[in-house]
Image (cartoon, rainbow, N blue to C red):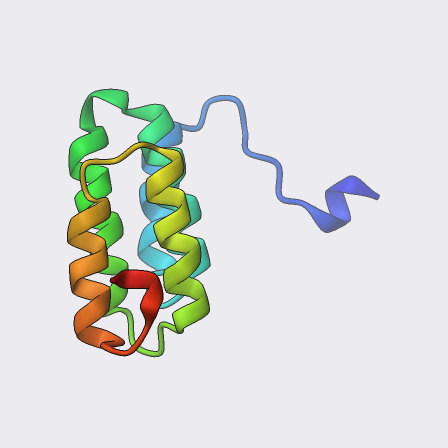
Length: 102
């Protein structure tokens, strides 16, 4: 049953490469992009600042919604990211009337 539902990752798979491929094939999905960047942050903790900056770029995905932006902001806050204010500023430009980003 599990094999018919989930694709198991072979033990020999390089997780960084697998995650990069996942991100590349899901770059139009906000949720998938955040999931992939969250994994990258776990796999490469030394790159967390770079990953956090990539999270801000999620606002450039066509069709990103206010609800998705709120979820991204909460993720950055949970990570205690230095990019929280940068994200809020960029989001304010996209949704100037949203109190959330004030």
